Length: 194
Image 1 (tube, rainbow, N blue to C red):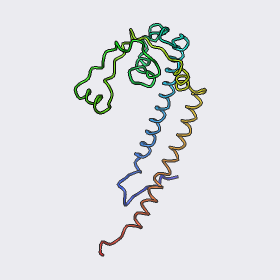
Image 2 (image 1 turned 180 degrees about the horizontal axis):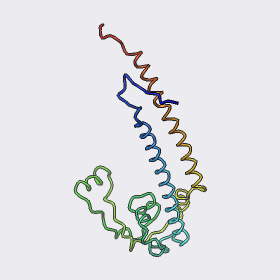
Image 3 (image 1 turned 90 degrees about the horizontal axis):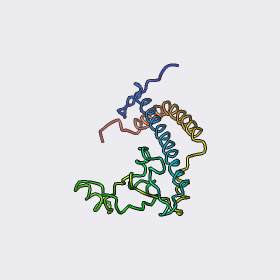
Image 4 (image 1 turned 60 degrees about the horizontal axis):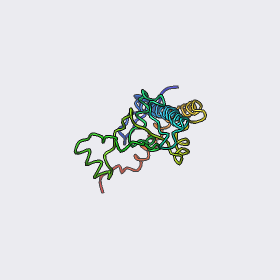
């Protein structure tokens, strides 16, 4: 089977040199990396939320620190509970009024205060920050950060289905562009004389 050579009169596109396939497979790789990243995110955050619930940190008196949960050196957890993240909004920090404000320029202050209508976010000192998960937010946190039952099956299924779609698109897109080019050629007037 020989490769079909495509030529478009109305488009400045060359699909014959493999650039379309490279583009489609690159998008495929990006989607697969995104799915893999979201699965890892859910597993990591679930382990943290589960540790907070098992520690019994459900009110201000039972608030815990990262040290007491053995999450002190975990950079990914620190990244996830930074000020303003979805995971940090689930928790209540008991000593939040002592947190320092984020250092920012005048433009940054303008951005936060005038444009966003919000105050400058705080920097969470992870060594001293005590937090808990209120009972009214516990169920929402468990639902949001619970990993899927079979993440490997989901990942493999997604990868296979997307590979089939990309393989079909590498064949279908040049043909669809050829049909559109033929249509535009027929609709374009052949003479500029009125």
